[in-house]
Length: 108
Image 1 (cartoon, rainbow, N blue to C red):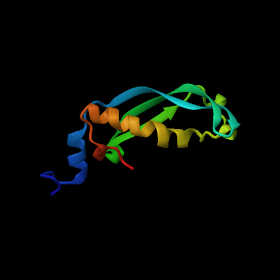
Image 2: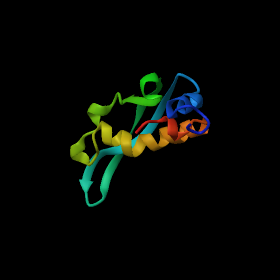
Image 3: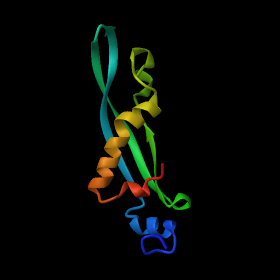
Image 4: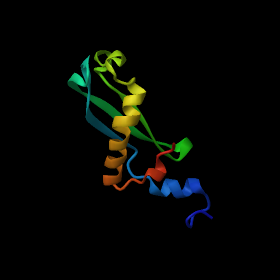
């Protein structure tokens, strides 16, 4: 038994809400780094789709950034995975939490 269900998968399935969600999340990045803590800031948007994955009994996220070619690591920015992990994912979790979706149903 797991929280009153026969298995953890059944429990997680009981927490499922909609099949999918879409978020457009704005973020800032270093457009031009002049050194000595002097830089220009740009803004972009990460498009995030959160979908229910039956095989994993939880939600998974896919993401893209239309401007990723303009966001250069040489200026001090991370790659798209680092940007998602450090800037966007916490916002996704907050938005899902606001919708009543627990992080329990978001496999690591």
